[in-house]
Length: 426
Image 1 (cartoon, rainbow, N blue to C red):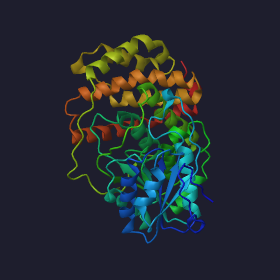
Image 2: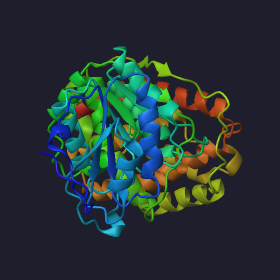
Image 3: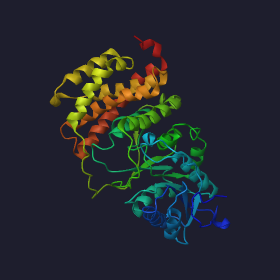
Image 4: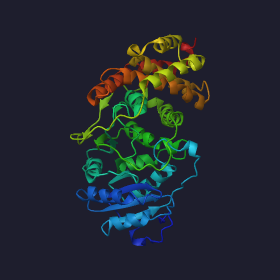
């Protein structure tokens, strides 16, 4: 039987602990009393129109505030709130997850198991820290699953063109080219899945992996796509969430996100070696009337300077990862003035693929490898920002689509070197 997993004194009735539910809403929480009410309220209203029965599974990490009590108060008698235990580890502040929160993989696994116990037709994952979740957003996630149209629906949020650059320049194009699905935000924290896919998720072997707390969202998306389940995405507007901790630095964030991607593609090589091209995924909703957020406080010139310093300091390290022609091209970029500072799409695709190959071949320690990618990423972002028009959302979308095409075009470069690395050693 599930336990409260918190300091709340509110008991859970045995009769409700595993009552069948059409929809299970999974929420990971820890001291979220200020936001949990709005999330549960929107979840309740969002699923009411499409499901007869619903249940909130609160994966609570022993909250010391009224998180669990408030969730139950808002849910009312119509929807039961069941709190389940998960291990919330103590984490070094310098190693906080780039996205999500400590113990996320354990919390999600507990929710998925609880959903299976309740014979749920759909399970939707939400973040307890969301501050602007609307019932319509929950509907867009869960309705395609309940209607049998999709097995996996990922959230797609509106961002400024210069936000989420790691996803735009690495995660999305690699996911698209290797797995064949144009899922724009494959590491989104909010998603919905069907009962068959839920079972498939629980059969995966990555749950106890050391990298699972930071990679699980992307790995679940990959499991859905490579398992040939029907995937789509829901446009949910702008995401707003309460900030609980200091964000990790860029090196840590890149190491976690890109590192998780490299681990996944290595484990699924037999699949993506056979994938040709990519397909668009169905989209639920639209972004009409959504105002693009303001630009982040980023200085393209400082990024360009950081790239130049990186070239001077890491050229020999890069030479152990990338071929001479790429190093020569990077020298040209480093010497270029701002108006001609460009990293071409085909060059960038090969750079990312060379790092994937180096990770696969273990040419250097994992941390050193991903650390060497940081200045290159800053160079790409500077190149993107200095390109005229990319601050316009429509132009930026077209630009990222062309980048995805370049990754598809350069995919044979990766496959040939992955299969026969000895042929390409200098």
